[in-house]
Image 1 (cartoon, rainbow, N blue to C red):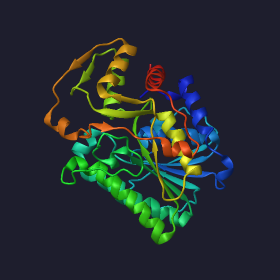
Image 2: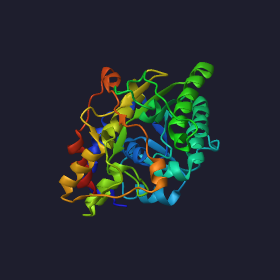
Image 3: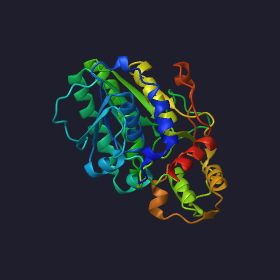
Image 4: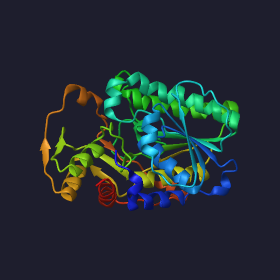
Length: 339
């Protein structure tokens, strides 16, 4: 794992993201982030630390957290809590807000650990919502564009609801995300909780973990290593790809400005490409070739079956957020940080 703190571009990203945080809105100066070693959780933590907040970073692997955050010179205080979110929290520290980003989020995990994927999203969220009640804290639940299910050809706005095959184990992810969002609404109705939901598009960036098997991450990894990019499908599926720094900035924007009980897509309007086009962009930047290889049966079963997953960004734009890199600039930035 590369030490990202040595990259001036990564430091620029953190400065940009932290600019969306109003320190006056955090009276306790504390924020709890689950999944803190993941792609999203780690960059959110860095931005909070850069702003001077205390981050209670929760994860299941202390050595991974020590490795990930070693070498940061931010002014905030990082406190790691080794804990599995499916278990109730056994500490009592008042925090301003909770960002629940702990979730298996890539195909290999859906194939190998579908039960864990569901439990982290449902039981894990329930434990965070319970803790938020004690701390009188706002919760940001990190959901996914996969909640929309199958497309009828139009972009997914926040009102869209499509088909999900609930009897296929691969649906452990979208079904759990749907159930978790309903749980948020239930807590608001029954307990008066304060929750906003971030529905992320496909995210890419330098904070991707070594275990990440998503297409964008694998393609970038191959390109950086000067290897041919391996495609295991014709790549006709169309997705919205959003640079991780833009996604983090959007999350902070809805944390501070989003309406209780509302969900907001975070998706770059200029990040709409097919998987084939994505591979071609990365191959062009890294000057490598593309090879077609047959996918294994387990790989095929783990793929998202939705052919077109394009998220509308209109709602969060109306909330005042419209900052995004286009797909080529975001990928170029990712590669420069990682090289």
